[in-house]
Length: 285
Image (tube, rainbow, N blue to C red; front, side, top):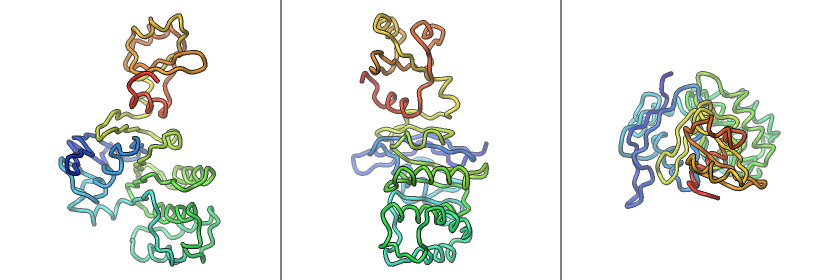
């Protein structure tokens, strides 16, 4: 598959602080990729570099372009949803649709109106009359209506209640995503997106901790819940993380001998959220 994003040695410094430390990753087209990390891990810095919003060191190509030098051309094929809505407070919802329709050649007005109809937001209301969650939904509807090859979502559902978040992600998969599009989601709320993702990139302190397809996780990682009488033997197989739950200790392994692990208990593939905690903790919890 062709790469939509290719980064080699991607580095970003703010004075003495290294926000991205020689990061390498490749994102193929037609994928939904989670760039996942705690606050301050480098997610937003990477996103800004991908969108051409900041300078950087190293090599970065997005849809075949160098983002910072070719941002105008890049944004013809990419769209972006930030973690905060930025539409003017005096603007009516229908005027916002008219505005984007007039300036972006790949905006699909009917799609935006369809998204908004699901949210039941009155088109004649001004942004200042909407709740925070409604403002976010307007922003989402406008951006998702752009027929782009790459959609970048930076903490896209902040401010939305549970029902609105689920509705948004359902629309993302059912009404927006197809084999011609790629979605990059930056988030620290792993549980909300893990069932949607085809690939995960864990980032912490500016470095990539894990880069894998979700499909390959089961071939690489295993978790076993072990009783106390087998704990020391199980630890002898060199788990990289463990935690206590329901009277047992769950141990996490990477590229281990599954036949040996099976003697300690049932082997399971960790969820993305559990694996995220395990890889970033690197110790007992």
